Each structure stands twice: as C-alpha cells, then as structure tokens.
Length: 435
Image 1 (spheres, rainbow, N blue to C red):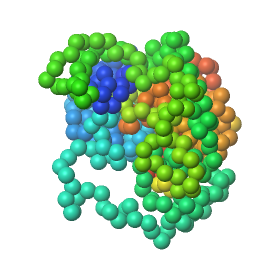
Image 2 (image 1 turned 120 degrees about the horizontal axis):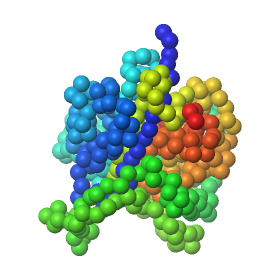
Image 3 (image 1 turned 180 degrees about the vertical axis):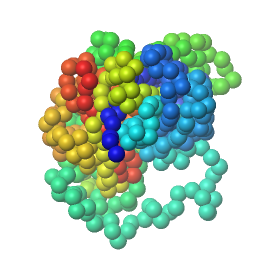
C-alpha cells in the first residue's frame, strides 16, 4: 500500500463566547457550526460540496442538537452522500476527528473531508455526560471507577523516559478520577510551580492575544456572526421569553486586555481544591481557562488532489500521537502524546518552530514545556486559551488551524498543536508548512 500525504487546505471558526452566559446563549449552536462550515466552503470555491466525502463532528457533551448525524452537514449545504460521524475524546474530540479523517486520506480510503468541533458548555456537564434523565442504579458512572486500585502506584515502563520528576506518593494515593481544577493543583504540587509563575504566564497570554487582535491576525480565522444578544434576568440566567436585539459578534468574548499581576493576585483559590501534598493551593479562575461555546472547522484533503485542483494548502500533517498518564495528572498528557507525534514525524522537539498549546491551565503548559524542552518563545505567540477560551470539543481543530496559519505567516516549517484531555490523556498533531 502506498501512503499519501494529508493536507490542511483551510480552517475557520466562530468567535468563542462565555459558556452559559455569553453571546451565543440565545443562538442555536448547530446554526453557528453550519455557518462556519458554509464559510469554509465559500472561501474555497474550487472545492465543491460533492467532494466532501466524510464529515466528522468532535463534541464532548453529546448534546443531541449538535451530534445528530447529518444535521449540521445538511444545514451547511453538504449533500446527503456526505457521510457523518461523531467523536468524543473529551477536550481532544475535534483533533481526534481531524486525525481520523487524515488517516483515512493517508491510506487512500478518503480524498477529502471536514473536521468540525463544536461545544455549548452551558449545556455540557463535566465528565462529558451531556444531558439526559437522572441516573438509576444501573445507569450513570459506575462508582467502582472512582475507587482506588491495587495498581494505583504502578508506573508505566516509559515513565522515566518522559518525566524528570517523580509523582509524589500523596498524589498516587489520591482518588484516580478528580475534578480538572484538582488535577491542575496536583501538577502544581508535582512540579513546585509558584502562584507568581502561573499568574505571570496568564498575563503574557492575554497581552499576546490582545496584541494579535489589534494587529488583525485573527481576521483570517475568526468569522463575524450576527447573533441575538441574550437577555438575562436578575439571577443572571438567560430569559428565553425575552427577545434581544441582533448584534455583530466578531471577537472572542473572554479576552482581558487589562489583565495584570495585581488583579490576578487578589483572586482566591478555586473552592474545593486541596493540596494532597499540604502545599498552598495555587489554582484560581484567573490562571485557568474559561468555559466557552463555539465552533471550529478544518478542510482536509489528499495532497495530490489539492495540487490537481490548484489549491494552496496551509500545511501537511506529518505526525500524530495520543498518550496516557495518571488521571490525577491529566494536565501532563501532552508530554507522552508529543513524544509519540515527534517519533511519527521523524523529527525532534528542537525542530519545532511554533506551538499551539491549549492553555486549559497555566500550570500544565509550564510543566509540559519544561519536560519537552520547548522554549516559551515558540508557544502561543498570538495568545492562547486562557483568553481565547476552551469550548472543549472545538479546541482541537482551533489550535491545529491556528498553528498552520501561523507557520505561513511567519515563514516557519514545523508546528505542533497539543492539548491535555480529562481522565489522563493528551493528543498532539505535528504539521509541516507548505509555503
């Protein structure tokens, strides 16, 4: 079998709103996603709707209006012959979807497809349970998965290959599945990261994002949308019976241009988070990503088909990887995932020129970069998820398109998109620019 190159032709996304209380609250998100896909097709008129063979949706919440097969693709104007699938790898869902389509292209099973990521976090329950009836004694999460096991302290054979710091016994002995904010504190404890380091990283992220918007860098990525401005009641809940005015929504809603160390320093630690190592709790809402709603889409194609159509693809996909870690330390999942992607690509970390690292928490980016040996100067040069936002299933496609566009803008060669995943995973994609 002869393998082919899979390329990223283009990618666009909606602005990301606050989840549950933002600009998309009074707007159907399947319509938002459909507009993103329609815009992607309109920007690439040489690609006809009939050429889209497969359409993948990455979504963590499993909300019916977003994952019903054939729904969004039909709203976007794709034909009935376009096949559909839904992937749930939590935060890595749309990157997983993109990798699946790319692999089908590489082996010759598909020529062209679209990877969509979409999430409405105001409707998503933590843990990816989505909406539905209350659990009974035979449904819902099995309590056994939250219990400690005899294998809890066992370490993977390649642990020392990826990690320079041992996992504290107190963390190994803690419950195997924990809230994401608690896993972030565990990373802080393992790597002895200070509050000052976390907040300083956060300030830099918001400053870079603010500067990038001012320079118009995101105009090629974020598409303006006319939406109904939601009306909220005194309890700050959306009042669906109230009709709001139509407004233009054209930039991510969570950017804080005036973000500074003094304000971040006044924020209290997240309630309920503890340190199993009896250290100060350093995780705050300020150095954690917000919850968001939004949609992202990437157009993928076989390189020979793109050349035949006279297209100018952004990048080819040269490396993919998924890695697992202890669930208590899910934030460092990008470390083994990136090592696997580097091995697949046949390159080393020092050859990576640009990185889009999902900033779920400042701490996990700091720790992972230390272990991977990648300098922060190469990372999220136009800001990251601390300000852009992290609508779970939509983020993977977002960071892949962002790094591909940044490679073209900067004239660099290799880019890495990577993110952590709840319950102890990471996913990475390496792309090579086609300037």
